[in-house]
Image (tube, rainbow over the protein chains, first blue to last red):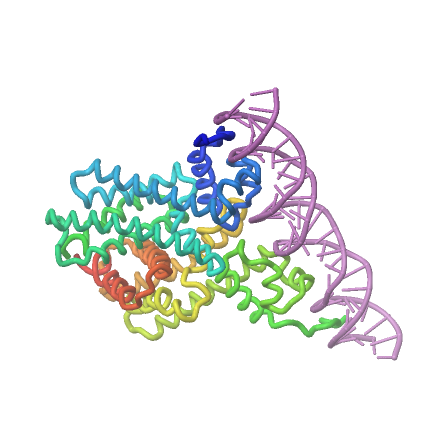
Length: 201
Length: 201
DNA sequence: CAGCTTATTGAACGACTGTTCAACAAGCTG
DNA sequence: CAGCTTGTTGAACAGTCGTTCAATAAGCTG
């Protein structure tokens, strides 16, 4: 028996997920209809459901893809800066400032999802929380690296600092939707990383 | 001609708006259907549309009501604290911590709306931004009062400080959906108001 | 009570929702 | 090419969406 005796030609799964992610990110879960997704990714309902199972299923893949992009950004920032704290600052600036130009939505897709969904979609919420946790874990790694280098006080709880960074990103990206003065946003991020609890008070 | 010759008995408009606000706040604009609103406020479609015009119209009234409640909370906090900065801190704690128990949603309804809606509902976004501005103005008033009393450095820009408070509220309320450790949230709020740029660094 | 005005009702509308499935197309194996 | 398996199609489904409107009910005026 051959390993594969059938039709093989398929859509580019990664490209499809990327386009779906952009639409979900821009409009949110509820405001994104399967019809508009069909147009965006140029697939018919049958193919979409065969490949992803449901609207929830495709959304879950979009959340995963979004998280992977964020983690990749973070790794890239780390490679560009010898200082882990500078890498974190650069990452925050990308998320808060650069996102205003090129991204489908100024909001973080994960934060937006946490805010939008209710217990009616508990599994999507749980997935989203888990992915936010993955990003937070990388923050913790960079913070502990920074502490080992003496940049940050070793007495500080790395998990707590990680939480504070996530809070700033969520807050700043919400604020950026109201007032997108890039200089102001940049100054606030600089301030955040150059005062308590990151620098001695 | 009499001033009013007709049926007068009506529903309690304020109570209806309050219930509608709770549902919109909990589920968001898109996930709230007119059918579920009908059940919640116990009115038939014709009455709702006669009184509020549309789903958007009722939502606009809900946003106004939410804003009025926030402003009332702020005024109450001011009356309870001789220090304007303590009043602000108390307000933030109410918004971030107490809201976990009694409110329909841990998120700020205005921030949630800003995040959820797109240019398809530009007028609702504009209204929401204006209401966030009203709250920010009251923050500015309290901050300048605080500066006049010597609590906060007069060189600091009151508008900038107001923005920073809004950013903290948005960020903390998002974070509270993931990790609702009240002690942690309380400590972060205390930290925020007792360090730069509110206290000397 | 009659007559006017206005509030309320709820069935109904067309459009849209997420999803299904029988029919069809396409590539591999033998 | 025949035969099998799998991918793709799009019409169609039952349900829900926001909204309308003719019919009815209810209170005020005269």
